[in-house]
Length: 406
Image (cartoon, rainbow, N blue to C red; front, side, top):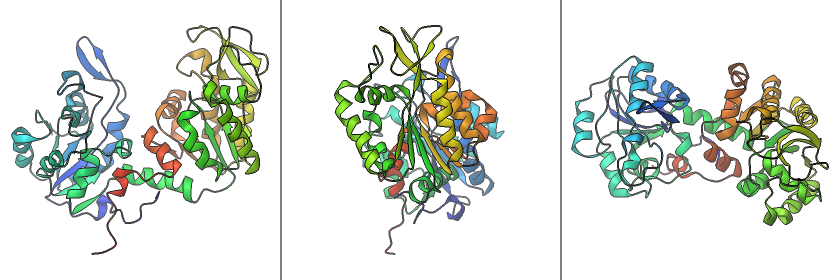
């Protein structure tokens, strides 16, 4: 279910003077600068601010919790949430209290000492392997820290982890924050009531990663535009020699089936007509050729300008556009043109435009703040947004729904 049906918003929850556990997604990118962990993009922290500020303004005692990275064996100083706590304090202009753990006596002491309108950030939930195991005993320890549960971590709702799934099961008062509410509403509109024409743009590396999404979208879209390395597999399935391009050989029959299904459904499936090629991903420049003219030893690393213009035409006619996956190796300047062209086309469109998180969201931001600002919705969760589009029920969302019986 992709709606907010039976999910209570934080607006309606009784949070005044209560200990409110807000599950956020502070899994931000970092780098080591002179031995100090530095945040390189604080978007996930800033996205959580409206919910946190709302709770503080209503006099809640705010307990924030998040994961960070994939710790191998218990606590890892490089994956501490301390830099996030520091950045959050700067953004909020208030002190953010940080215990040395997310459960146990240290966490209890900090949480129970909070006064109305104060905030603490627990240490990385994944320092405890029980978090990823959806362990009920671990969830019970987290439950001891709060009276009300709010999930605002869209990037984690597709995982049945303790803080996302087992904990809210134990809570009587639970609901969603503003970010999660916004994500479900935007992606739900794309799936349940998209204005037509509905155009979907898929890119990225593998057809296999997007199979369920393609199946779901073919039931709803008027046109499906495919770029990125996954387009190579479709072009090869049509008999073109893509030379050294990345191709999923074992998925060629499947690509033919998808092409046939699109014809049956009368969905226009648009593939690149030209590509930017080079002999390696490390090349400092590329050249544009037709899709049937890839030179020996070369690989397609971006869609070409004719393809980008064709994709832009479809976007211009659409009333709903969903995009997930870059059109090429956009991290490298010679192969960023196609991805940025799609981003600009969407920014110029009056359609309801949704960017499905992950690399696409990163690409939109790289295309420029004015481009990102014009998108109707940029999702904060790549995996979660794709699973919602597939029509899956996500554990972190379903557990928030009130049962129909009292």
